Length: 134
Image (cartoon, rainbow, N blue to C red; front, side, top):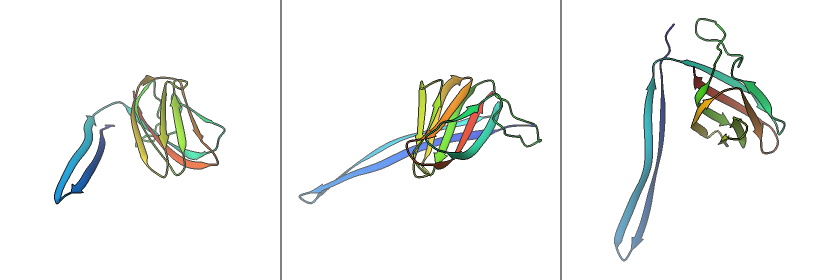
């Protein structure tokens, strides 16, 4: 079994102003693209409320393409998407991600081990949390 993937992130805005017939623009942007050819990935999905759901990275409940259960010893990158304000906390609250309105949050979370807490600011939300690690 082989694993490969890419994490692309891009933010781009155009700031413009017009005065006395002169148009000025400033483009602000950040981007990165990283290719991965090994490791392990897991996707955790569910519904959550203000009471946190705990995700154990050693047993996230995800199966790989060959049908084997994925286990992670550490997580170094994560992606979170949710339909309402939802947080994912790694290592207590050392790294906190937030997604709202189906915006994708992508983060380098370091070499986190143990558990991840997922919860909403209020009400309930559906979420997907993609974990990349070893």
